[in-house]
Image (cartoon, rainbow, N blue to C red):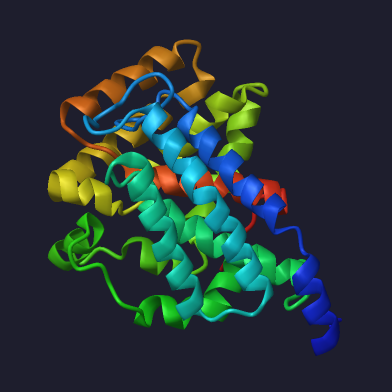
Length: 290
């Protein structure tokens, strides 16, 4: 049974928004500390990037974490999409200050931020305690996500306009189906294949996401040819046995090097990996949004 208006007001004031933000921060750190992720920055190398490294991402994560707390609190207070968008823009400004204007986590601010808001809303008692966070996002803010203003000069928006890709907005408005249907199950499968090696499980989930995601970051950098190459490389790694093979690390590193050589970086898959890790913390099991 959902709480009354008076009870909701009291509970909105006492939810542990800091814990929700902490889960988001930990998930972003784990994404960073995963190698090899094809073309992506990690604690080992910079992948296909020349304008950022692991320390850049760490500064960014620390800068945006307080805004995840603010988003969780806003969700607990019943905020509409307009309020969440304002907090998100403040988080982007903090990111830019921390990184010297390098866009490290714009996609994560958007997707993870919405999940934090949904977690706050659920913790306050406004929705059923077992409702999936993705479903909360789609039901409560889905229309506002699709109808809101767009960043006309962002790489993702250019790719969406040029190639007709759905991108992060479509994922969010649909409740993050790739996180629930691909990322979370792949983390569980990866833990089994690797016999409990959590970093290897994250590598497995990254490849699984790249194999299916229409990643606008890849489209921006490599067009349809680059996207097709990335998907084929990820599928090939998985079809060869992935992290279940004794020599999987060398195989994954070779794919990583091939992405870097072609300047390909699947940033959308990185964001969804972090969100899948967050959902694993908050929901603890693979599930399906459909």
